Amino acid sequence: MDNIFLIGSSGHARVIIDIVEKEGRYRIAGLIDGLRPAGETTLGYPVLGGPDELPQLLQQHLVHGVILAIGDNHARIRMAEKLADLCPGLVFPNAIHPAAVLGRDVAIGPGSVVMAGAVLNPCCRVGAHCIVNTKASLDHDAVLGDGASLAPGVTTGGACVIGAETAVGAGAVVLHRVEVGAYSVIGAGAVVTRAIPDLVVAYGCPARAVRTRARGDKYL
Image (cartoon, rainbow, N blue to C red; front, side):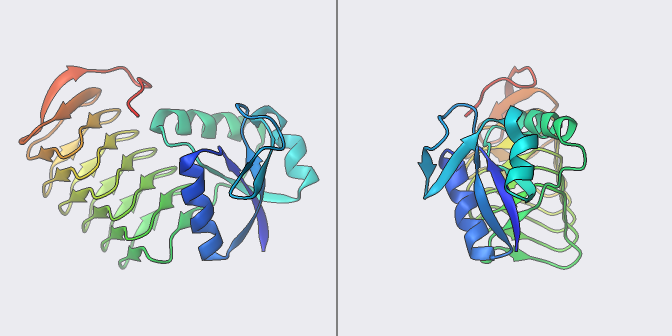
């Protein structure tokens, strides 16, 4: 069983720890978090140091790869880019809960996390470092761009497209063949019936863009 680190140690890390333990494919050798002192623990796993110490920690603990336990989409992608530069060849495994349902010909990019009760129907494409949260569903032939996330209970129709780093809020619905642009935020409970552009915040029923946003603006 290969050793891995989790990057992050907050609530999102707790969920990923549970997934990794249930999958039984990897052993968590520790947590990497520059905002907490070394030695503090999350669910029994110690913080070993910060991201800048990763090259040395990988060697010391014979670690195979890392999973990014960072909930914010833009922050997660920036960290992935930083670590790839810092540690060339670093592997980003997936974490897929055994209670998730994956249809035929589903493709999942590196570093993505699929949580309990999530459904990925046939021919979906999930990019790198995505989050498909608890009981979210991505219907047939849909695309979830790199770094995008579906919050708990999101439902999408078939052949929809969710752009890179876009966050779809809890319980939202994206209808069949609708495209949501990159770097946008869809509010909780929204019903998206028509295309949403890049770099906006949209909510309501039907969902409408209510303001613009910059890539990396906080939303959690």
